[in-house]
Image 1 (cartoon, protein in one colour):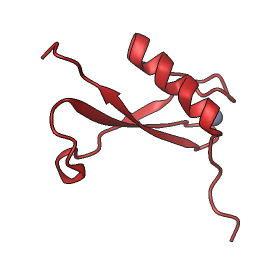
Image 2: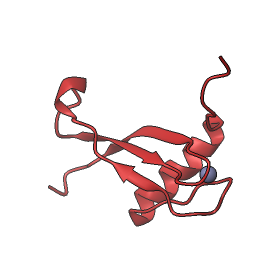
Image 3: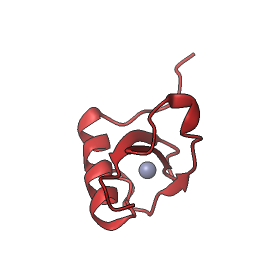
Length: 74
Ligand SMILES: [Zn+2]
């Protein structure tokens, strides 16, 4: 088994920065808009201060999972 392709950590950082800034992100490799998936936050015990985001590239099917700090805006 070769497993599924993964981003480099630095690429996940790019995705996270872009998503945090603009609410959307592009795949660092394909330059296409990534699809956002919802993850149930409760089971991760992250509370309301953080949100776990899961973005998937529709082209290469790599996925990036990261936590976004929600701050106090809500
Ligand atoms: Zn891609």
